[in-house]
Image (cartoon, rainbow, N blue to C red; front, side, top):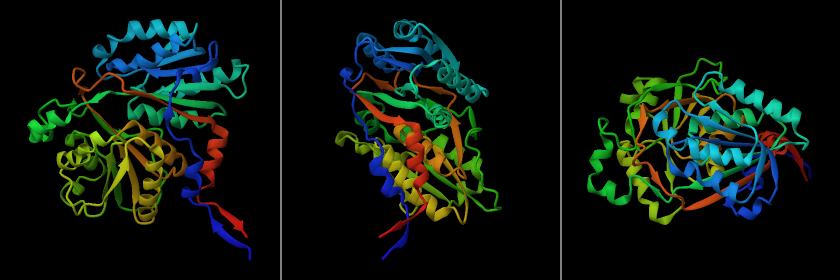
Length: 368
């Protein structure tokens, strides 16, 4: 008997690419993409993949690096070497200010230019997200999804993330203090993403889905921005998504995150992989399904890069969701991460096909 069935995200996720190890042989000698994107940061691994691609003789028609307003002097220390590699990758290199209001229009203009001058159809874009801040990731993915291009995401994973288990164990209370630097200090800006303002028009109360960081000050700033009353009485309106590291030796960070942010046992919370963006998609769909009829839903992605990537794809599926960013005044450039452990790739391929897959979620179909 034929019946009507709703296509679930669970039906779609297995068809989305998983992270796989990046082998330089994936980049054939003389291979040319239309565009290479990366970010200039203070972490040395911002140089890892541009250097390795240079050695592999990978080339791109254009190379663009994104510059941040935060830690400008620290970031500048890596600029000469980054530019040296990028100028070997491409004869056309330029910088774009990542935190400027006109960033989306600059990126759209760049992609329109690439579309017009590329002989490959669709043009191929490689995006190195190794030091891409979450706010940058969401802004980029939003614009990239508007174009019929092929996209490969590559990522250099740090060998050491601070705090280490020993650093945290020596004085756990220190990491809960707002006056110490830790990984970052202060809050310079909390605000709604201009790219993801949320399209919910119903006069509903606010609710927040929050990926916390190792700085409770940022979490509190986001909660207060959504609704100051939620600081004292969050009820079921603040849902915490706690990152589960993909390596066994880092599992202690899950409980540390709970303690640093003062997350009570009774608080609504879900554990989400820090590495598999598809897990973020699944959990966000579950939370959104429970909340959207009763609340205006806001997400604040202060967690990992892969969680931010999953959030960006979810926002494409659910434009009613609002995104809030919280930018620190400064990052601790001397103690953030060290080295490079592994390098990874996500082969998204043609974004036309990716959009089609994501658009299927929630649609009806006939089944025998």
